[in-house]
Image 1 (cartoon, rainbow, N blue to C red):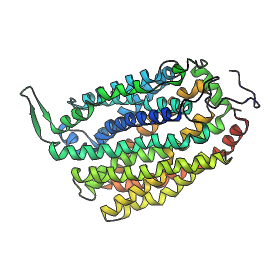
Image 2 (cartoon, one colour):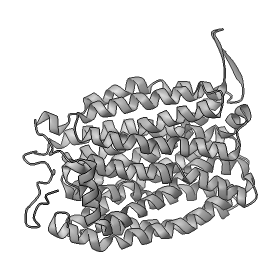
Image 3 (spheres, rainbow, N blue to C red):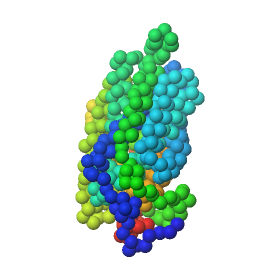
Image 4 (tube, rainbow, N blue to C red):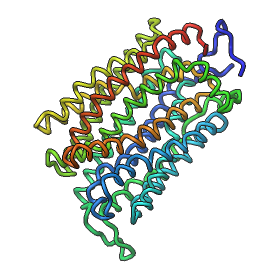
Length: 449
């Protein structure tokens, strides 16, 4: 693949002749993408709040529940991401996003009809395949609306949807359990009998079929300005990665590790508060949702603004240097979450943890998209998401479940989460730090070396 020379200035959008749209259009796009991503995370995480009634009704083991939360979703999240990345670099991105939202909404509703492990597995796989669209779609679009020195802040605002969606899923799920008892049976117009948890999945999944059409409110700059991106396949992407592995490998590894901790916490913290602190589902949902959401809403825009300011002053490795420091700083807070005896203090520390660490949701992908040629943005985001889909989203819940069982069973879930956090977070910070020399070199030449 032909490479631009180091002296050749690549246009800010990465697409020759493609001008930035008006800023208000960029922020409108951020709002739409945030709404749809919040919906995706809501649908994804609802299962975590309903673990106990589902286990009781379907007779599932701890490992099977871990597989439903992890492998069933993560494997197909990975499989869906690669063709989605290919489609995003070639076709209308709003159309591809609409299709993904529709698919995952059908999967959420299918969870409400599951009768056994394998039907539930298929429904979760459908959710994973559809939800793989939002990360690559958003990361591909936003660099064409905002210049590099101002990209971190909108990417951070958008990324709040990931944790806000988790918080909303706990809050909405907890609120619904006040009106619909998850373990009770309900007659639906004399046509069918549903368990409460099944009804909750159906109620949460249905609106997505309508909200999917919000994607068509986005104006794709490539289409609206009648510009085409130069075609490049995954073979071209592999060659570029081989030439720049000193940046790509530690960058991807650092993000994989910190995401593994976040996914494990998100999946098993409801069970921790129920088993260890004796809180009810109705108490856990709003409280945990508030802690995660508030910490992320405050932290992410702050991290994005600070990183943008640092980057604009000439610190070309600002995004990764910043996230390495905050990831390491979050480790002792994670320790406190599971050691304090008071659940209120524990929940407050959970909010503080996500406030400190939340930069991982936006800053690593921001610098990746800044240095990435436009014809590879969708594929680069999809590969990154595919890796996280299998190893993070797929493996983290199962990893925590396995460590929990090795430590003595269900009551050891807090010890398991604490151990995983203390081991993995410092390794993540180290990986980001190892990528700093290469990202400085890439940014110095404004092209891939």
